[in-house]
Amino acid sequence: MFDEISAALSFYKEETNAAKLYGYLSKVEKDEELRKNFYELCQIETAHANFWRKFLEKRGHTPSGGSSSFALTWSKIIRAILGPKLYLSILEMTESLSTETYYKFLQFAEMSEDERKVLKKIIEDELDHESLFENQQSALPVGNIRDFIMGMNDGLVELLGAVTGLSAVYPNNPLFVGINGLVVGLAGALSMAIGSFISVRSQRQVNEGVKKKLELLFGVSKDRAKKELIDKLTESGLPEDVGKEVADKIGENHESMVSLLVEESNENEIKSAIFTGIAYIIGVGFPVIPYFIMGSSFAALGLSALLAALALASVATIVSVTAGNPNIKGKIAEMVITGLGAAAISYVFGLLVQNVFGISA
Image (cartoon, rainbow, N blue to C red; front, side, top):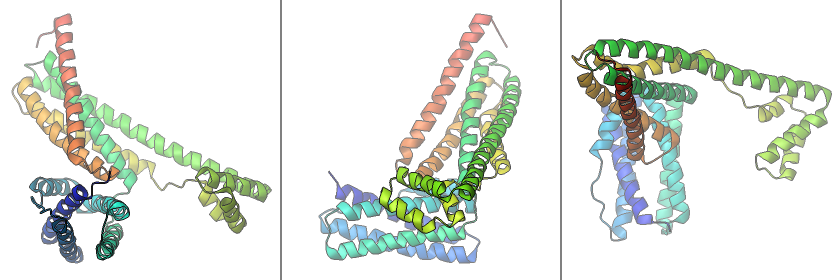
């Protein structure tokens, strides 16, 4: 059953948080035009929050709590880590999620005609926000965001597990643990970068091969090429008669036909490899650095786990926003618990190795 009150309460808090965030961004951004846009967005989101407050009050519910200091603080941290350009990409994804949830509410909630009219205007506003961020930000492509997240997450989890296990074996030699962790991390970064390079390059080569095949097919038999297009459109869920109509209309347009049949990718394998490798090294730094500054492996392990947990929480936030998952806290808990859990298992394994082989350091 659709719970419109809970949904409206959630919308009220989200819009209030957004208004606070845009108000903050309007004060800290250096770009004058962007600062002005953030100020206007603050006003618009405040109006949206007022709509949801009135919506709830009309139904006998008084919203409480307002903006979340946790959400605002975390947004500031993420912006500081990612920088303004990449953060705009995250905001654009967030606006896309808001549009979808509002449209669902419009379909299923019981509302007056006036309320529906206002909500439709709110959805238009959210779509405008999404377009604004898409047009103004010149941040990294989504593919490189994915590369960065995967690389950093792998570096964090793998190296946290490695230094944790080594800490159990060499409790009094943190420098040895740190150096070994660094060597393993650099090797892992090279491996990840090479893997990313090969993956992206191979996919592009496959696409180019399919494209050449279709060009040859189009030159030899346009009817066969048209059949390929109809089959592709039908597989995607389009009715066969509509697919035939589309194929008939663009059957003589070679470029249009190829674009529909071949998945184009502008992802650069070199850039993908660089971002993956650098992100992996950044991930390595969080659990490894403490071993170069602390006096014992045990003390370094505590700081390492703390830094890794904070970094994992940051990655979880980015993953949640990118995937359109509103349960950010749940994703943070999941990634932090699994990451630290893997480290705990590694520590136990390290103790086992120490006892079996009689290693002392």
